[in-house]
Length: 327
Image 1 (spheres, one colour):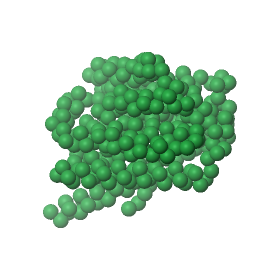
Image 2 (tube, one colour):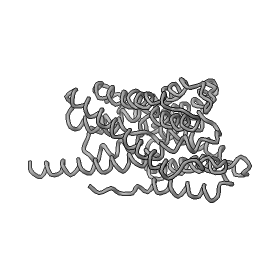
Image 3 (cartoon, helix red, strand yellow):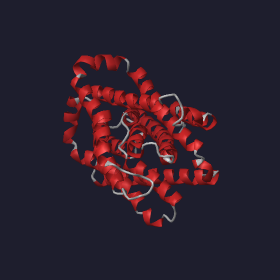
Image 4 (tube, helix red, strand yellow):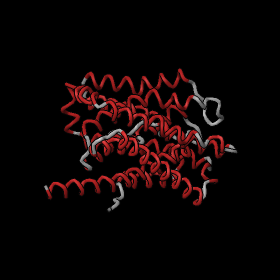
């Protein structure tokens, strides 16, 4: 299996380095209105997401309910519960912050584009992947803040649910609804410029990541995170991914899924969305100095899931192609 370095992962690394050497552009004192640009960018991301969200494909995917249930349970139940069991072991404020970061990762919805692309490469159930990735994003708008709200008394996070849901409605739900309403007028345009819109999405994400890490670096937040700690975080991320991948695969076999449905369940059920993560982090945690630390496990997970799933997808693709050659 060949593991390719994803260009977006490389871009994230470069942005973090820029934030380290030039944090002054992302601080509160900066004259660059990064927060305003990010807020507008977030709304546009979900506006175009609404245009691409096909109601007909969503309706067609409703019948395979066992597959959908497994994927959504993996995304919003198995992930959070696995992290939740470790909360009693946290003994100080730093450990609580890291645990909160992992729980935030666990509570996020699945990613849309990469899930569908990887399922397509592996010859899985593409319509089901589109349906579940899309539904996961919509469910996440309600379920992610709900999960995080159980820890409202934690000193790391101050939640105002009224403010949070107003921001979610204005920045995410409303743009999605408007996008779906304008689908027949702008659908062809969006399809034509999909690659450019993807570049725009990633640029906004990189801008949010820069802002988050610039503030964290300016506050010397990572001074306590050693290389050893970083390796430990990466190991936990890999373990979390591996356990969920195994559990999802186990239940897929138990339910008698076809190989195509099994691929879709494991690929969609183990993904976490960096887009939703960066967007939700700004809404849920505001301008907390620890925001960069909150996003660290998510970015490690994002890099891991792309590399691992890419390798697995290539493996399934080769198996499918060799089977077609022998038939």
